[in-house]
Length: 289
Image 1: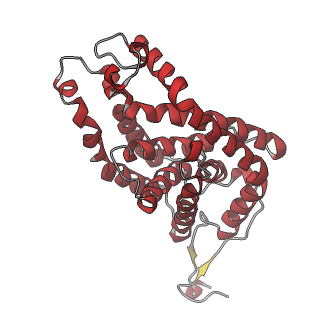
Image 2: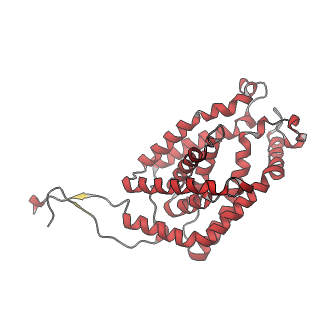
Image 3: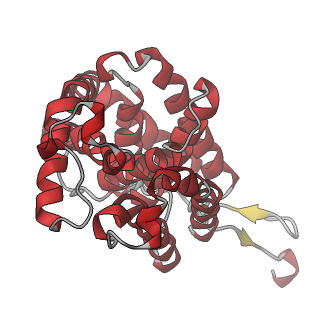
């Protein structure tokens, strides 16, 4: 017998661990992710697309600081996406805890040779809890780590959106592989994502480098040059300068996925099922009995 106004939880049902998703990937979630991603794409790509005689290029050296203003916008979009996804207090708590773990792990690498253990948290979190949660975890975790390490600067919005894409991509991976096949898939994704993250982050400052910094003409951005030529220069610059940092980051992520991937995924999925984030609340009226 239920008391008036009391809540009852539906009987728990066993669901495959790979089907657990905290943040529903519905219409509002997709819309918020598209807005955030559009902001990120514009932030990264505008120097490659702007006309060389435009007012934008005339103030190119001020542009990185201009994009730092986008930080509150990115945070607002992320918070709106979490709210629209229907997360309750338990889901938000899970997001906060995992973001704090990611932020706490980042200083352990100290930026030495690109070693950053936080990426395994973003990849496993996105994989276990879905693309919406992964995107939120990446952006919030990167923002929290910047506050923790004093790393806030014009690069932070770019780091946030790129980290969000890493978590988003992990959540969009095929859901069917399990066991060793799943770990192999995550290891391959970790390698690709960590290398692409480094290459992508180069875009926040690379268009403003010149040959005066000691770089050859084939490694710098040329305003007004064909897009294909500038993209080739960007790839050569990334391979020459940042690959030495990106590969250790990728190797460490692969090792951590192989060592801790299975127990961490099981722990996250078990906690998610027991918390029953998406269980509906039903009210029963005893007067009707």
